[in-house]
Image 1: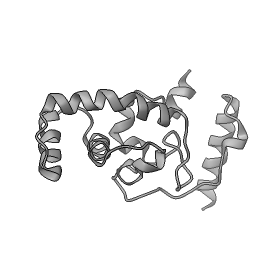
Image 2 (image 1 turned 45 degrees about the vertical axis):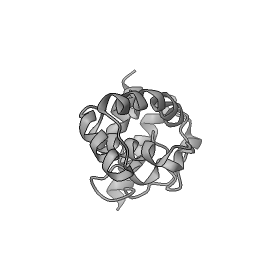
Image 3 (image 1 turned 90 degrees about the horizontal axis):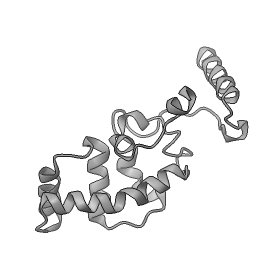
Image 4 (image 1 turned 90 degrees about the vertical axis):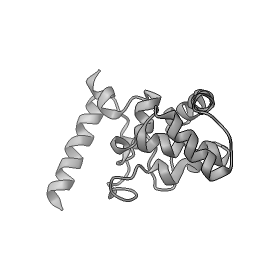
Amino acid sequence: GSERLSQVNTLKQDLVLFGVREELFSEPRERCGEEDIPCSTGRIQELGIKLSDQDSDLLVMISKTGTGNWQQKAEELNKKYGLEVDSESIKKRWEVIRPIVKSKVESKTEMKCGHSCFTCPTRHDCKLHDELDAPDIEDLLAT
């Protein structure tokens, strides 16, 4: 209730001191999506990126487990789509789509929930951000 509102107002004041424009703030929202599930798992298309179903699924996998374990990712995609791709081709595919996704994430595209990846409350559950090396609000405040 009022304690949370006080915390939100204190945070807003601190952000303004660090140069964040006040018009970027919206009303506080409850956490998006289900607990412990990165929102990107259901919102990849909302970034405005046109990806194949396989690439969308690859992004979902990366949002859940990060990069690495390419063989398991290849096996999951092969099974689901009847493909015959290997771990190296999946890794190369990530290297191709990574800059596209990074550009959209850094552009602060707003999704239907009203958040961008930058302001998403599930951001720290999402491994995709780590793999993109996209700055988050704590990084900006530290500088």
